Length: 339
Image (cartoon, rainbow, N blue to C red; front, top):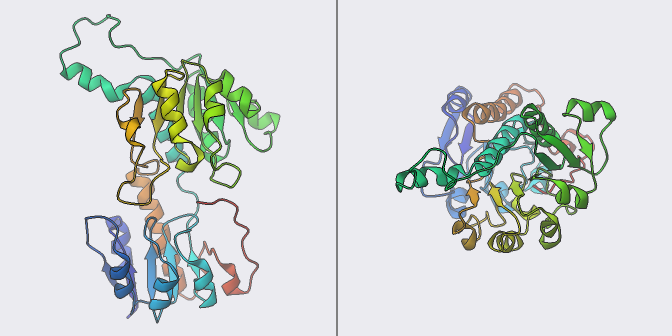
């Protein structure tokens, strides 16, 4: 019987499908990602590894699984799996398509709303008894309609965000490596292409939506933040490394921008993962735990696609989403995005 290993819990609907395909072992620990030594021991007799983000399947892990035939990742890029070693062993490594763009765009817009309306502090304001009159000026927020949203990176997530913002009567400006066609700009709320300096200077809200590349790593720092309006708000749901958190903290403390909403952070690799300590103490920052794709329906779709790739492989068919097509005698993929 085919032995399948899953290093953390996944949606039940995917587990039930996997159990029809072979003997499934799932790591049940709840105190964080599985330890490397435990993973090394668990995979030794496994035919198929189901891979998930934050759990590195390095060369040692790939070599330890002696009968390994396939690695199927619930991730678009599967950068946490040693693709080179998989290829050396002739083991296909599969990812999944981009199921998350609409979900992440929706979440980004929700984070923008929550930051603009200061929802993070609204309940504590109510609980403290500070609410004494319905039209007082003691707790004020900012509206969206009529404001300008600047989108850095008008890819799938940025485009879906633009549609949602345009529906709320926001003005859309954007920057990316190449300008969209007039028809594309019209479909995204008459979006206007700007150089990045002009975007930061003119926007009431700036949403960071680029992929992480060598070009975008550390893109937003002291200089671009200094161009923003004192009333502007910054949102980051792309990758933590795109933004210099220290520079952001300084800008917020000094009142040079109004607020920020962050779902991703520079430090997401260890037990101290999360934002800089100083950001926790600021009332004008909304913080969430990298949950931009954490809609139940989206995660079900992602998990099931990874199972479908396993099903196809076991049925003698080429999986849909092979990241190392060299194992099938095809040219290697050209990957630019870091994560």
